[in-house]
Each structure stands twice: as structure tokens, then as C-alpha cells.
Length: 389
View (cartoon, rainbow, N blue to C red):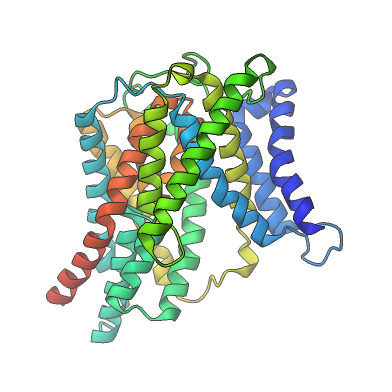
């Protein structure tokens, strides 16, 4: 019964919020995504676990969160205009984002390492630094690989993963509530690209089930399911361990979706993007519902928590300063920051918040490059720090 209720909750609440947004303008102003995030956090942290009425089924919630992104990426990319995409700009955005993370990560290593300065404490914090580099230039797959490569103990790894959930959650709340306003105020106007509704510059607005375009919508869904199935299958084969290779998965989803966007029925198809946006809403509700603060070990090793927070928000400040010097637009900086800190699956969320669907390709490209380099950077930095120590 909990499984069915959880499915209805994950699919129905976003639809309800979208319908309410048509009547209550304040939902549009704060964005439906913000409302869904608050609902998810409240569900996870305020409803007693033994209430006897509704308990979220963890497995179902995780499954829907994992499915939503592979569906959202092709749907949104098929609604994008990729002709005006600039390789030089992508390189500039990626380099500034990557440099910001690396500089702050190394600076934080010397600021936050334990005061006892023993060889073991130095090595332990170098391991944390290496894993943090992998997370915030790539993602969770890099985190696990680097943990194995540098020999991080399971206890330290548990602290890092718990604190990462906390600080990235705070970062995501900031992005959802204030990101668009802050980045567009501090940096040059966003680069050319359509809003979600034919050029609007506001936040995300969605009409995923337009009856007048149901044939195109069904075609978009069918193509997306084929793309997702092929990508997932190849990613499973590439990993060989029963779990999909995330780099291969995102790369194939992106490549096949961009190719599909050139099909005559799908060229710059707004309704495809809107359907993808609905999947982003489901994803947003799912990740917020999974964030149960009561189950986190917050007091275990606080210097690691402070260090991860310093990396995330310090790199954000440094990247913004670099972007001002290089005159990079605010939308590009925000989406690249989200791609590096939260990983490519969060790029559609950032694009939806910005109301700029043509920024999706840039964000996913930055995130993919981070995935590819994350292991090298993390492991290389660890050995460099050990050599210096």
C-alpha cells in the first residue's frame, strides 16, 4: 500500500502544484520547484515514521528519482536549439569552474586540517581532500572510485557522504530560492537563448499535457523511452558490475537526444521541453523527500563539515569573481556550478529555474568533463599533498 501511495505522491503532488500555480501567482514567483522542495523536506522530517497513515517507501522514492533524470534530459534537449552553441564559451566556463573548485579545495585543506598535525591526521585529511575534489568536479561515481584508490576508512567515508548531503542540500536550497536573482544581478545578462515560453526571461512555467499537441508529446515520450533504454543498457555493459556507468549514461542520453532534436517533428519542440520539466519536478520532490536530517550523523567530525561547506560556497564566490573579469553571463555560471557541485543530473533543474532551455547542453557538457577528469584530479591531488607532507 505504501508503494502505491508513494507513487501517487511523487506523480500527483507536482501536478497539483502546477495547477495551483495557475491560480496563485505567488507560486510562480517563488517557483513551483521551491514549493516542491519544501513539501519534500516537510514530508521527510515532520511526519512521524510510525504515523500509521502514510510513510514514504524509500525504494520507490529512490527509483522514481533515478528514473526522472534519464527521462528529463532527452525530453529537454529535444526542445533545445543547439545550433548556436559555442565551444569556446563552454571551455571558458568549464575552466573557471574547475579552477575555482581546485583552488578552494587546496586552500581549505590547509585551513581546516586537524590541529594535532600528526602524520595520520594529515593523511586522513588528504584523503578527504581527494574525495571532495572528485565529488565537486565530477560526482558520486568519482567519490567511490577515489575512496578506494586512496584507502579512505569506511568511517571517514560515512562522515563525508553524510556531510555532503547536508552542504549540497543547503547549496541547492540557495540555488532554488535565490540563484537566478543573485547570478543575473552580479554578472552580465544571460547569453542569447529562449526562455521556456518563447523568450520569456522569467522562471519555469510548464504545460506538459497540452491536449492540442498530444501526438507530438506521445512521439517525444516514445523517442525518450528508446533513448533511455539504449543508454541504460550500454551503460550497464560498460560498467560490468551490475550498476550503470554514469559517464557513459549521461553522454549517450545527451548525444542521442541532440541527434533526435534534428528530426523534423521534434525541432525546437516546446512541448517536449515541458514534459521534461515535469520530470524535473518529480525529481526535485524525490530528492527533498529523501533528505531525512534525523538519520544523519551531524556531530561526528565537524571539521569535515566546515571544510565541505567552505569548498562549495568558496568556489561559488571565486567562480563568480572570475566570471566578472571574463564577462561570462550569469546563467552559464549558475548552470556550470550546479553541474560541478551537484553533477549533470541537476542541470535540467537549473535550466528550469533560469527559464533558459538552451543552457542545458552547456551544463551537461561541463558536468561530463568533470566526470571524466574527477578521478585524475582527486587521486593526483592526494599524491601531491602526501608528497608535500
